[in-house]
Every structure is written in C-alpha cells, then in structure tokens.
Length: 520
Image 1: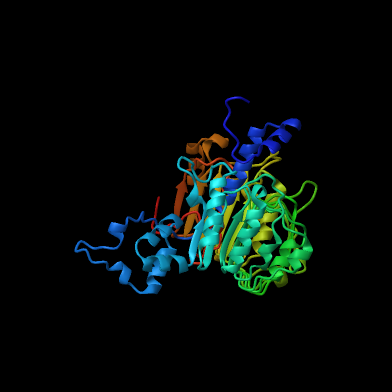
Image 2 (image 1 turned 135 degrees about the vertical axis):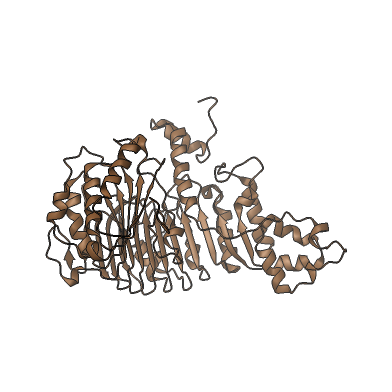
C-alpha cells in the first residue's frame, strides 16, 4: 500500500477493519467519495459574492470620500451578509461602525470557505481540525443571528462534543437554512436529537447520518420548515412520515440514496414537490396531498424478489409525474393498473400534463404495459421516455403492429405536443414506438431524440440517426420541429438535481431541450 494516495474519508481504524475483512480500503474510500459527490451535487446553495476587500479601496472613492460607510445600516447588513465569511469578517477592520455591523449581521457560514490552500472542494481530507476550530470560533464569537449554514467538511464522529455545541448555538442564533453532512465513516452515525428542536428552520438538508429512534422524531417540531432533504440517511419505516407530519408548511421533500427499501405513506396539506432519487423503493403511497404538483422518481430500483408499488390516492393538482417504470405496480386510488384493464375515470389522473416513463424496449412485458399506462393520463401533453438498457438478454422486440393493434390512445392522438426519447440506440422496439408516435400524434409540435453514447449502443450514431430520419415519414402532424442530439454520457449514469425538479418557474422538469424554431 506504500505510495498510494492517503484516504480522503476513511480513518485508520476503518481502513484497518476493511483490510481484515478482505476489502481494499482505497476502493472503499473512492466509493464513499462518489456517495459524497452525489450528495454535494444535490445540496442547495445560497449566494455569496467574493470581494476580497482592501480597506483603502472599500471605503473611499477617488476623491477620498467614504461613501459606503454612510449607507443605511440595513443596507450594510445586507451587503455583509452576502459575503463569504472571511471577507465579511475583514470588514470589521474598516471602522468601529463596520465592526458593529459585522457583529450584528445575520451570517452565511460555509465551512468550505476555511479549506486550507491547496485543497480542492469537495475532495478534501475529512479530518480537518483547522476547519472545525474555525467554525467553533465563529459560532462562539458572533453576537448576531446566523441564518444560513453549510457544514459539510467534517468527520462528525471525531468531533461529537463540538457538533453538540454547534447545534446548541445555531438553535439560539435562529438558524433558518442548514445543511449538515457527516464526512463518513461511520455512515450510521446517529444524528443528534438537538436538530429536531430547532424550530426556526425553513430548509434542512441532512447527509450521511442515521436518524434517531421514533421517540425523538415524534417530538420533532418544524413549524416553519418548507424544504427537507435526506441524502444517504439511514432511517426506519415511518421515519419520513413522522417528519412530514410535524412539518405543517413543508413544500419540498427530497430523498436521495435510501438503500433500505423505502416505505412512504405521504399525508401532507402543503407538499408541492416530492423527489426520490437513487433509492431502493418498496412502497410509496401518496395518500392525501391536495397541493402536490410534482412527483419524481429517478434512478430508483426494486428490492430483490419484491415489486415496487406506487400508489396515487388524493392528489388533484399533480401536474408532472415520472420516471414511472412499467415494471412497477401502479395503483390509482383503489385500482391496480394491469395490462389491458378496462379504463374507468377513477383509474385516471386527469391533472397530469407532463409524464415521463423509464422503459426497457427489449422486454415485451414492459412495452405491453405502456398503452395502459398512457391511458391513465388522458390529458398528458408532454411525454418523455428514458430508454433503459436491458440488464438481461432481450426476449424480443414488439413491432409497430403491436402499437397499431393496441387501439387509439387519446392523449397520443389528440393532446401530446412534445415528446423526447433519451438514450436512443436504434433498437427495433424503440424504432417501432417512435414510428407509432409520429404516425398517430396529430398535435405533435416538438420531438427531441437524444442518442445514446455510441460506445454503449449496438449501432453507430450514423445508423441510429438514419433510423430516426425514416421514422419522420408519414407524420400525422403538419408542423413538427424535430431535434436529434448526440450524447457522450455513460449509459444509465446521471445525476438528478433536486433544484431542477423543484424549479416551479419552469413547467416541465423532464425537458431535454426546448425547440423554438425548425431544426431539420
């Protein structure tokens, strides 16, 4: 092991334990880093503007008159609160007034600002006494509120007393926006119960922790919490339900990397967006969510030997739904959706306008489920397909004849105006579906096909492109713009970013591209 790169995340004891169990600690360290990078990619950020203040330039104009210091106190507080912490602290040397401003300003605290020179964020040794000491010093010294905090660089197991004190101070200083990530190991480090008593929180993200027992969660109180993110957090069945029940104004719930088999029974009067990414799902039931607009399942899988059940009960405002997989059991209200089922109004979600499906076109049972799924969403106007690469040998591709014999699908023939298909490899099942869409969708105005990386496809990009071009013949729509894009991404690998899914300023969270003019 001599000469190898020092561990980024493993302490000596964990590395030694990995060796005793026959594992390579360097591989374990790299896998842990990937988990952290995925977590970091989904943490919300807040604006900080570096200024690298020099006193002589910060307070004087060319005529030598200090104009900035005479600005209203509230505006100065706002300026200082938006600076990186090191720059904000430097303002205290400008004058006694600036020092008072600094001491009373609501701070933005990001421990990454204290990384030593030469260390790249986010890859940095987890055991950093200098960062821990700097955070402790700031929290103890600052007299004003600290509203936004991001603590993500510390192996919390090595600094449990400091962590307890940090949370105590943050609660006292009215923290509103908190991201707290443990640099593993251990990955099952218990989260201090103090977190669940911080009633000022409006946004909370937790990464790589183990939630405390149910008794603690039942005592939680988040009267102002609007956004909750649980990233690679170990939890028991019912834990998320309990947190949601104690967050009466919660609007966004994000779950990443739940590997135990998630069971969720969602009841919320306020939730607008539910996103679950890279998790093992058992049963996700939206029981009553009158404000829910977006329900997104991305890169999630089913426990071995089980079947994931997704149930939509009362969600009258659901607008965007995906990536639904035909291999999952879909239940709408009290109806389990099966191939060829006689469709009733009670088994339809008429509010959904944006639908996304994750389909393996080489598995006939998956494809046979698609017409039924599509009929469950009669008002869908935008359809996005992720063409999933089959892990097992394909058992045959269903042809265009299958789709023609499936009977008319209302949303396809008269409503869908936008379609995209990603990871297109030019396989027969993909081509048959694309032909059917083009020959049937009279309202279609935009079609986007994203090619799979040719390194992971059975056909060259040129061959696949030729297949797409042939599908354009006999189009039912007279005015469809189409766009073909190439990709160099690894097949099936990608990061779903929660901020994109919860961006309500854009109506379609699954959109690949917006075509605004013909691109033939």
